[in-house]
Amino acid sequence: MPDAGRARSIRWCTTTSLRKGDRVSWIDDPAFSAADPFGPQTLPYGVGRVRAETATGALVRVGDHALPLRPLATHLGPRLSGPLAADSLDPLLAAGRPAWAELRERLREVVDRGSAPPGADLVPLAEVRPVLPFAVADYVDFYSSRHHAENVGRIFRPDSDPLLPNWTHLPVGYHGRAGTVIASGTPVRRPRGQRRPQGSTGPVFGPSERLDIEAEVGFVCGGPVRGEVGTAELADHVLGVALVNDWSARDIQAWEYQPLGPFLGKSFATSLAHWITPLAALEAARVPTPPAPNPLLDYLSEDEPWGLDLRLEVRWNGTVVSRPPFAEMAWSPAQQLAHLTVNGATVRPGDLFASGTVSGPDRAERGSFLELSWGGREPVTLDDGTTRAFLLDGDTVEITATAPGPDGSVVGLAEVTGRVLPADVEPTAVRGPGR
Ligand SMILES: O=C(O)/C=C/C(=O)CC(=O)CC(=O)O
Ligand SMILES: [Ca+2]
Ligand SMILES: [Mg+2]
Image (cartoon, rainbow, N blue to C red; front, side, top):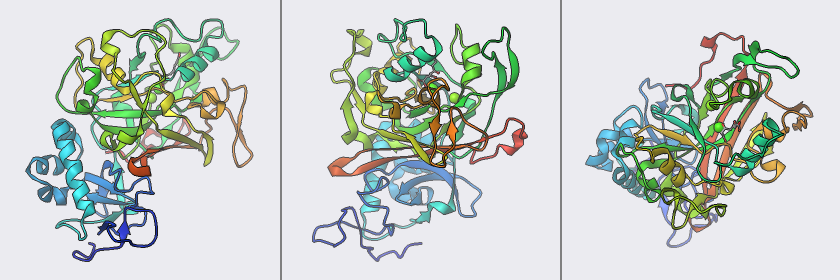
């Protein structure tokens, strides 16, 4: 427990000398400054077990520490005490935007204090075992990067137009598998399935030989259960964003997907970061989306269509192989949610929708290894001198992101990581920071 009553000289500003008027926080962590991605401008939410505790509880990240919210619940106010006493973020997601705004406001006050509030317990991240922060209700995956869609079209369907005619009129997507969304750090067993090797007339069965990643941004939904959500109403239904790795078996996918789209090639595992960065922390990261090539139908129109300037980084066994720019996404999250619900289908707390693979125009901005290695024909060289087209057993992938924050600060999106296990390990060996 930090020394209540004694102010520590940890400040929001980035210089080293204390100036008159600087705010002083009780949080004793050099990584909790506006110059760092998890400073007071970010305050992302997660869930985990702390030290020897067996129960999970909601957390807020402050620099390289977590602050358990249950012991602070009473201090944070009556509307929040119920949701914050829970073992996941589910009740907070259900509580909706007024509660999210109040919590962020209260937490800004808490971290801004000169002394620790009653119940505050600053826990180093090394002493936290994070889990999937909410029960994923439905999972939808979009396909909203024009660069990605064109690249994949050229690789998978070289004899056709890279974009199908619907792509510029609506955010193409598909329903994924909520039950196999896993927490960052959980190992991923190489899937087995049907695939048709090149030159073969029929399928064979076996471990995927073209295991890939997709670097994506996930939007975590809450608030009232509703259909027909307008493009101006995104913030009523999205608490925040978290990085996603949509693991994809390209050989299984290429054989199975016509005409209904991705199925077993993508349903075995989708990794989600432990920490949800509030949408409210990303105001300064808003950017206009690239101009739409067609006039849009009314329900997809926005006065000022906006995306987010999230700068992703993909590391393959530690080597940075790509820096996908989310600002390049053609369809905005508001358009995605409007499209997802335009037929009356409801969004409910715990729904997760992902942006689709984030790829930019340059080779070093591609968000999948399928694109980076151009279908396996142009392998990527890692820092250890080895080359890769697709994932080998034992490989690890880490995706991180930052965004511009207020007053020149940087807002972080926490990492999503995973390591590939061989197809023949027992499923029970696939243990990770689940629930
Ligand atoms: O165009 C195709 O046939 C396949 C596309 C994908 O695999 C992409 C996908 O899952 C959606 C995305 O992440 O962009
Ligand atoms: Ca995907
Ligand atoms: Mg997936």
